[in-house]
Structure formats: C-alpha cells, structure tokens
Length: 192
Picture 1 (cartoon, rainbow, N blue to C red):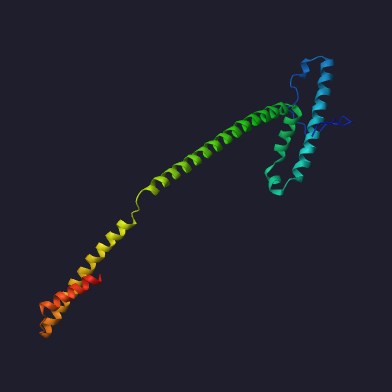
Picture 2: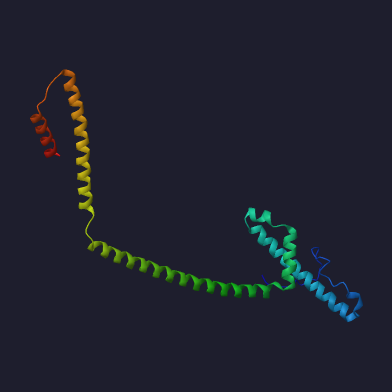
C-alpha cells in the first residue's frame, strides 16, 4: 500500500486539525505556500490511506470489522501518512528475526539435551537389567514362603475341624481311639 497522490488538490473531510502546523502565521509568504503544499500532500496521503484501510476492513470477516472503529482507522491513516511507522516496523522485523534465531538455538539445545537424557536413561536401564539378570530370582523364595503359609493355614483348619469333630463326638458320646486320631493327622499332613 504505497501512496500515489491524486491529480487534483481537493481537501479531504477526514483531515484532522491536530496535524496542521499551528504556527504557520509566523512564516513568510514562501513558507506559507510551501507549508500549504505540504499540508495538501499530507491530506492526500491521509485520504488515500483512509480509503485503502476502509477497503481492507470491509474485506475482513464481520467479527473483525466490528472490533475496528472509524476513529481507529483514522488514527492509523495519520500514522501511516507521517511515515514514522515504516522504520519502526523494519526494526521490529529485525528484532523478531534475531529473537527467532535465539529461540531456534534454544530449541536445538533443548532437543540435544533431551536426547542425551534419553540415551543416559536407556544406558542406565540396560545396566540395571544386566545387574538384575545376574541376581538369583526371588520366585523360589516366594514359593517356599507361600507353601509354609499354606501349611500353617491347613494346620489351623485341621485344628478347627478336629475341635468340631471332638465336639460332635462328645455330643453323641462316641469314643475315638488315639491310634485312629494319629492316623488321621498323618494322612492330613502327608496330603498337604
């Protein structure tokens, strides 16, 4: 959007009074005519930028159009007409490029650090796996403990049934030989 002045020198209704030079009465006639030409050129630039910005806003989606007021467009046209925004934008682009280079370098460093951490963790995991592979497995010990617990549980269950059996025998006045009782105990423990 570059400015191309119009052929006619008509004044624009969008020209703001704060842009004009307030002390133009103190200058000579030549300065007045130069100042007048400069003001007309400035007004043409503002009018051109206003038209371009309005066209640009009309092409935007409706939700963006509602957020942009006429006053905002006028202020932006004045800023563009003054020409001070272009060096600022150029400096911002350069600073953004430098910032992107810094961020890209940080990203590369971070990826390298993560890769090193992953390889260190893999190496440590392999070392621990090799250490654990040389150790005896804990499964036989656990199986032996489980068998001992099962024997204890069977013994407790046997005592409980024995007490119930004796209670039933006493109730019916039955007598049991100690030989038969020892035989039952042997059968139970051989089985478990």
